[in-house]
Length: 204
Image (cartoon, rainbow, N blue to C red; front, side, top):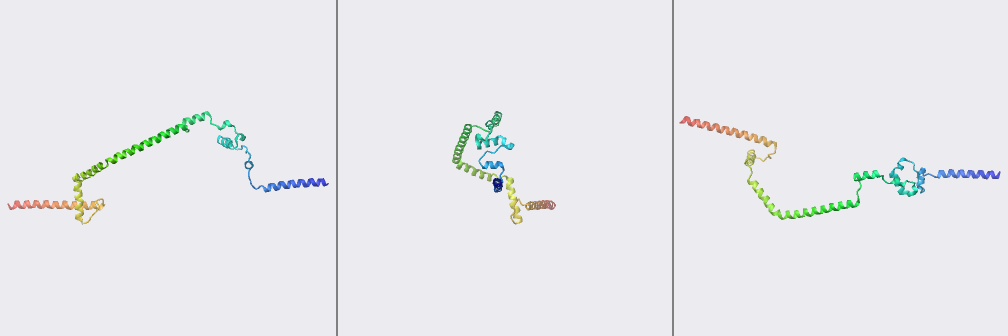
C-alpha cells in the first residue's frame, strides 16, 4: 500500500513538473528557432533553403557540419562562360591597368589645358585690344537703316513729349500715327506747291 502511494506521488510530481515547465516557457519560439537559440543546426525545411545562395550562407555559418554539398556552392561551367561573355566580372590587374591609363590621360589633359591657358593669357592684351577696336568699328559702320530707325525713334519720342520703349505695343501705334501725319503734311505741301505753280503761270 505504501509502495503504491509513493509511486502515485512520484507520478503526480513528474506530471506537475512537466506542466510547470510548459507554463514557464513563454518564449513562443518555434522548434526551428529553439534549435538556433540553443546553438544547434536547424534542419532544411523550405525550398529556398536548397538554393545556392542559401547553401552558401548555411555553409559559411556552420561549415561542413551543415551537411551542404560543397560542389553545389560553385557556379557551373556554363554559368562561368555566360558571365565571361557578359563581362560582368573582370580581372583585377586588367581593371587596375585601365584605371592607371585613365588617370594618366586625365593628368595629360589637365597639363595641356594649363599650357593652353598660359598661352591664351599671354595673348590676352592683344586680343582685348583687337576686340575693343572691333567694337569701335562696329559703331562707326552702323547700317544707315539702323541709324534712320534710331532717328525715327528719337523723333517720335520728341514729338509726343515723353520717352517710350520701342518694344512697347503703344509705340507701334504712335509710329503709325506719326507716319500718317507726315504723309498728310507731305500731301498738303505738294498741293500748295502745285497751287503756287498754277498761280505763277496765271500771273504771267
